[in-house]
Length: 67
Image (cartoon, rainbow, N blue to C red; front, side):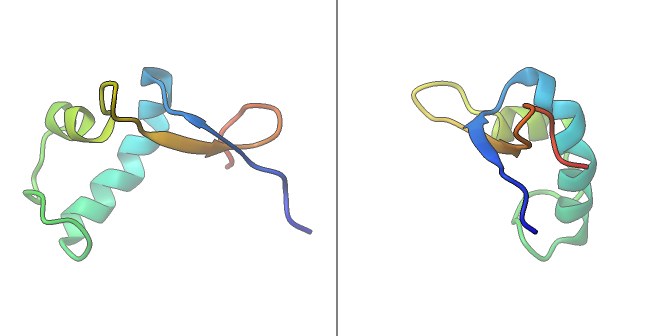
């Protein structure tokens, strides 16, 4: 059975859940052309965009990130 997911704007509070998997993806060097040793601060600035741009996340129906 598929769970319901809510797509919403990402907030700074989402970053602690985003950074661990994003760091692994960037370090692999197969998906992004970013420096493989990108700092967390630089990655956050590139990922969590300021308006009028936007970044979204998918969360469970209770508003929590899926595990």
